[in-house]
Length: 329
Image (tube, rainbow, N blue to C red; front, side, top):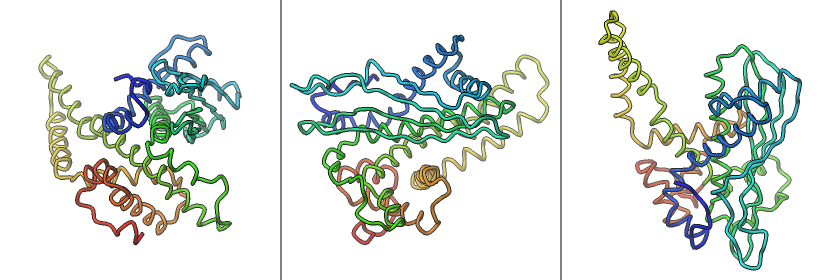
């Protein structure tokens, strides 16, 4: 499905009536961005475009090989634009995605670290998105398995974009913008740190990232990998190749993984995905006690903040998870 904000009566209409569908299609929207980004990079290299992941990886390898420290670029999608607001001529235009990639050269292991922001403002009660920005710092191992590097690279790009797009389409944010001051109300560094993680818009974006991880695991799981492996083996055997015991072993492992998957509750899957999101965001800089508090606060928030959020996130993904009340937290 294509998304153009102006297809709807208002941004609120999009984000309430179509929110569930939009959340489930965040990854699809980020894929469009990645595809357009790869086309831009291929054009700059003057090379034939491969898959999006391989094209972007080759571009980053070229930066490292040539000693180019910084690359900046921007793209827009024809089907992704702001609302057109009467008497405001700069509205209704495609929303720019801006990128800055910083190369740390070659290393014995490839590393990709993305961060970003979503700039927005409220006009006549409507939220207008000025830009969605991603900054990637990376190092490249030229001899690494490109398949592994592509997977890690695309995951990093997409997870960050999902987070920022969730900010862009946060229907509660217009009423909260004024409360997010540029300067914290405290000088205490620990409290400043907690303030960031407990912002409602950050919490909602983390849960949208969580949903993206849960959905992606449906398609990229050890269970699916082994299923494909023994199916391929069966086809080879049908063509006359020796079977041996290999296929039977894969079938057993697949059966074990399938049984484990079926016995894992949605709460357990969601907890695992949420901790993956938070640990990636913490970057190893959050103490365990504090990380547990932030994790628990996230779940209390979606359950107690308002009925719509409870229905959207808690009832669907944490129906059997009990945490202290938001007021207690």
